[in-house]
Length: 181
Ligand code: HEM
Image 1 (cartoon, protein in one colour):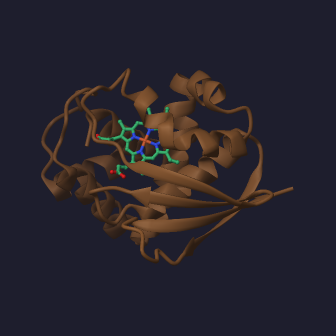
Image 2 (tube, rainbow, N blue to C red):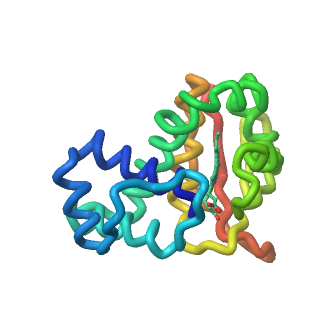
Image 3 (tube, rainbow, N blue to C red):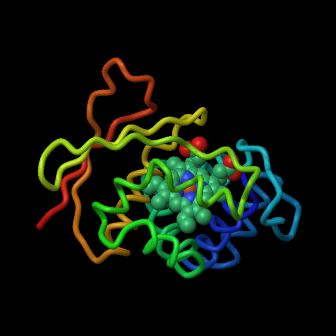
């Protein structure tokens, strides 16, 4: 994954746990470089190793780390730099969600070489949506939950999410979303 993503993991570890933890994680996964080139593509394995190492060091579940990282990504990494992109894509959580399937094509204006996921969003009732997440990467479903929770906070709204049955779709997962009013 792009250096920009790995840098965000590093930033999260530094702000939540401090630099000693980051050094321990780098040693654990044998990452010997001092920093990430934000536009460079790093092997996905490295990103998964960082997550695994945080789990080991902090005695956390993978899903816990991924949810925390999803929230961090939206609120601390993306919003300060690309908040205007969020607002341009939707004035509310629901509007943004309906726009989400097109969102990474906008992101690709800044990062043309990424391999982003795909989404399908069905409105199932008033304030209820079903999100289909498609990616060649496995194991990141909880990251999507964290991203959605971060987006809800960005729009100052409250949501509940729970995994649904994938059914006939080739989706990695299906997430039912209820916007609380
Ligand atoms: C300004 C905001 C955002 C930016 C700049 C951004 C950018 C990126 C980048 C650079 C990657 C790595 C892809 C690669 O290296 O090949 C990525 C992956 C990903 N993005 Fe976004 N993204 C943003 C918002 C979102 C939002 C709001 C969601 C969903 C709610 C989302 C879902 C994901 C997921 C799940 C991945 C993991 C990769 C995968 O599933 O294959 N992103 N994004």
